[in-house]
Image 1 (tube, rainbow, N blue to C red):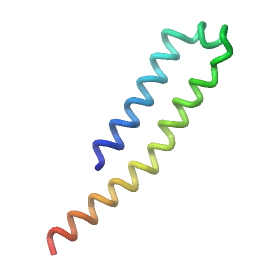
Image 2 (image 1 turned 90 degrees about the horizontal axis):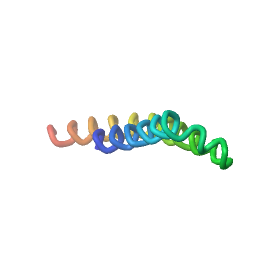
Image 3 (image 1 turned 90 degrees about the vertical axis):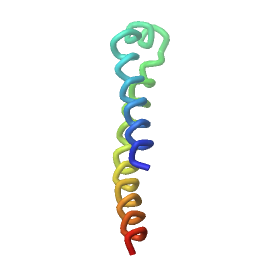
Image 4 (image 1 turned 120 degrees about the vertical axis):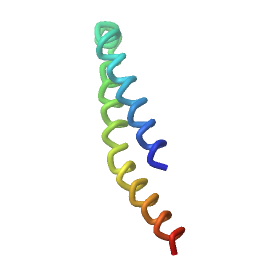
Length: 66
């Protein structure tokens, strides 16, 4: 499950960077600057999700060993 959480975080980070680098002027001109904050929020929400998935995988491995 960890790769899914990491992939989601990477997608949010990439989207935010693309918007920041290539579309910052367009976002500002059209009043969509909050999209950058949405990308940041998506990435930050992924951090606890990643922690949960790491714990989930560890518990699943532990149960499989028993």
